[in-house]
Amino acid sequence: MQIPKGTLDTIGDAIGAALEQLTPATDASAAARGDAGDLALLSQAFDQLLDVMERIEADKRAAGDTRTSHSSDAGDITELGEYALKLLENLAVLANESATGEHSARLAIEFAVWIVRYGGQIDTLEPVVDGLASLANQLSEPRDLEALSAIMAEICNAVSPVIREDLERVNPGRPWRVLLLNRSIIATRSHNPDLMEEAFAILTHYLPEDAARFFTEGMQQMDALDYPAQVRKVMEKYHRQWTLSRSLH
Image (cartoon, rainbow, N blue to C red):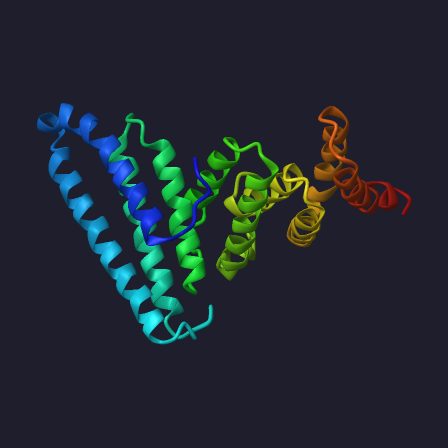
């Protein structure tokens, strides 16, 4: 899977691939379930969504690209993003057992990147986190992992304040926690100390209760996978801060 870019071209390509993959499975049982009509409506809804996104981009260019991430239309972008992710949910329902998982995962990230870069916030996080995890599992080159880590940083910064309040701490599978842990893992796998520092700072700020275990397991991985010295140095620093030094008090 390619690194998502959040452009209309990459979003359109991902939508087309998902719908094309879905069509054969739907046609085979359309008479029994009536999915053919649902698929046509969904395809039309995606087309309309792309038209709206294109108009927003055109307006931004006409305005001289001067609006910031906190511009007056940020709420509209957020609402449009929510609609896009709802369509993605409808796609998953139609897909059922068909092989659209990879395309849906890519689409979730593509939409999230577009929302962020046009000033919206992420109110529905779970499909985005699932998509990021799916993509990370397919990457091994440090350069690709650096790019993914940068995308995750953008998304973290745009997650809605309500989600970042993290009130459901009893749920270890909550998307916000998973996002922060996965961002730290991916930054480590990128072998980029600067990205590690950024990810670890966010992790320890929002999830201090997870820090000691994370850095202890991270040190175990340093030995098991023979990480470079610059990576080990950062992990050791945080391990000392959150385990060794705290055990002395």
